[in-house]
Length: 91
Image 1 (spheres, rainbow, N blue to C red):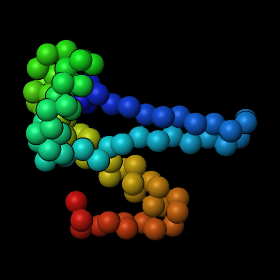
Image 2: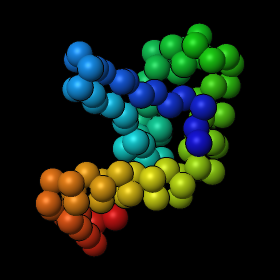
Image 3: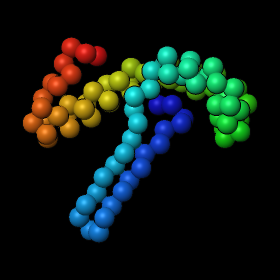
Image 4: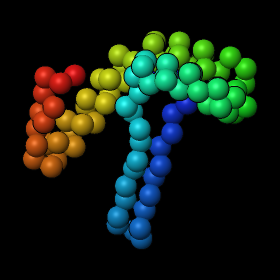
């Protein structure tokens, strides 16, 4: 799993809970980010030199696992919302 992963957990009182995660990363997304000098500088300031290159190699390595997890999350959500296989064939 890439080292830059963020999740936001939200609650309202004792019963309403939500989680927000972003698992929609692709290699072309990283290439786009890497083309923006300010992004490279910000990432390097946050996690050190050569951060974008490290992130890219980790994404390449972890992408199959990430895609499997994303599919499972979507399918579970779809079943709960009664829309199974909403994106079937669009992997």
